[in-house]
Length: 282
Ligand code: SAM
View: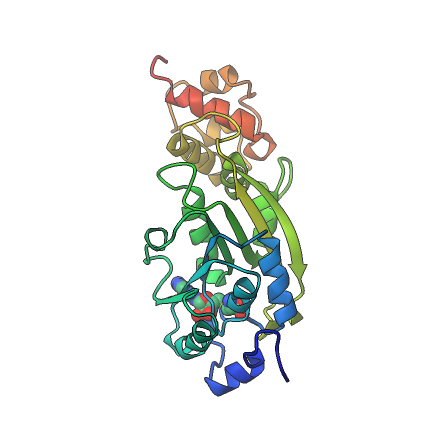
């Protein structure tokens, strides 16, 4: 059966190259090219942008990104078995696909990309959250990327967009929403993948804001939030006891009742607390 880009259907690619999915690499492949094109479109207009893709696998999403007009795709894949399939895609799109074999946690992708950059990936579940946290907490803001369009397990996606007062609200929501616009753009049932995972999945689209929503030192805010949610059921005056001397006073000065719990506190108040903690004259 012919495909839109003239390359073989993904089932054939997988059979030809013997890409039996490996669970330890988080390999749940998307084989429907209409679906991968939809995910590529969720990233916005790709023309004129470099795209970083982590974990291209047999290349379904890679093909979507290229067909949607990405200027160049840099694809980082750990599994050497996928390289031959990806080389066929590179040949069909001359000069537009570079594949690096390696662990995305170790490859310095930013150094190989030219602005503007969009990150689009169906992430392996075992490194997805770690990569997201790294992208959200770079040494400088704005980061090397303009937007992140990422597939996660649905439960993780819900934690990224969660609001105060919900079970899903926590560190990930605060890190993401402090400096990004974040929303879920697509949810997918297990059957969309081969093999089917046990859980539903969702694509989150995050757009980097030029400035944080509220001023705060990034490292201090991360420390405050990590400590507050480490013991999320405790009152903040206990959960944050080791954070700084006189924590009750700092909480009150930030407009936070010391008896409240972390999940009741919004982003603006956490930023106020981070500023109070960082202030030199206490
Ligand atoms: N993009 C393909 C798709 O949508 O069908 C495959 C997605 S699959 C969920 C995750 C991919 O990430 C696999 O190809 C896997 O080999 C790769 N992978 C796993 N761990 C990785 C790592 N640390 N660095 C780079 N790629 C990794």
